[in-house]
Image (spheres, rainbow, N blue to C red):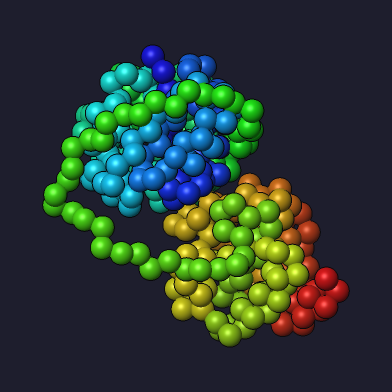
Length: 308
């Protein structure tokens, strides 16, 4: 029985989240295949075929998957599932959207957000906002899993997998794609950035995030925020880092005016180096920071930008 990874992509390029899932799949020990469901997605299939550790790429190229909705994609995946022991997808909005539907169609449990693999049926996943780790064993005939990408290295290149077309699944008439409002930015995407600069409630207003932007521009960094800053309307919710936001693990994470609630720490504490700037020396963020600066951010950020 093989292992199937459902690729995340935009019909033009393979998302890096898929590469982390492939690494997890290889650890399971079986033959790893990738499913690319899209429209005009030949370039994605070619890229997937070059990922190390992948034996085959299965391509469902159909207009129905140009903007794959969870309803239609889950039917396609469920139809292919019986030939595999494990189905894996990234623990991103993409994976969290359709994988529970696949689990319902197959009548099996879903293991979400795993960060470790003990064996082919035993996995580790965080609970209580990452303050504890649960080891979970599944006896289901097919293991449905979403993988936290920050816990696994990205798979390299050098593969030469065969590419095989598969028929599109049944359509789903009760929902259809209408449109998408996407944020366009020249900065790196938050979950894949090497450096992230985040602001919290201490920024005081959305206008003051210009101080964050000045530093981020010098570092070619992505901009993040705590939930408190998002709820206050300082920045859009796609900036949010944390348990109910995006999970990041950059090489450098700079937290500015963020106290360090456990919900925020759950989204960034796996960063390689953490720098905290806060005027409250008792702020919980300093407990996880590699470097801490007790200072007024309105003085420290302009000085930092100038030095950079």
